[in-house]
Image (cartoon, rainbow, N blue to C red; front, side):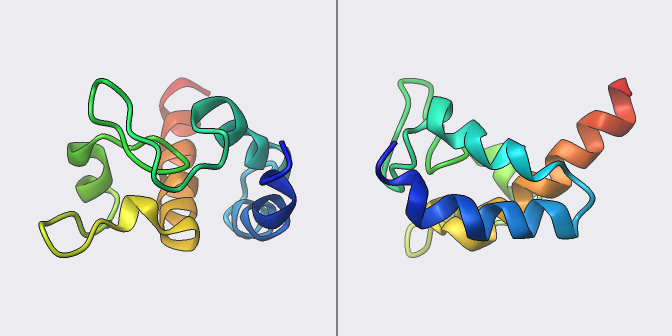
Length: 91
């Protein structure tokens, strides 16, 4: 929870700018505890816990040199697009 103070304001702004409720900036608290280097047993990485395929589909670079799933800004921008698509799909 202490790490959230560093990330929630910026993540909330990005989500709001993309038409997503800013309160969803707390979702990474459950997913990763805002730990940028978090890795799940299934291979999901970063604060938003993107798996490789979803990360690439939403514009994140994932290769042996760079893993943008760990970038709090770029991964939040991708998460906003993903959440928007989920909302459009399921209303």
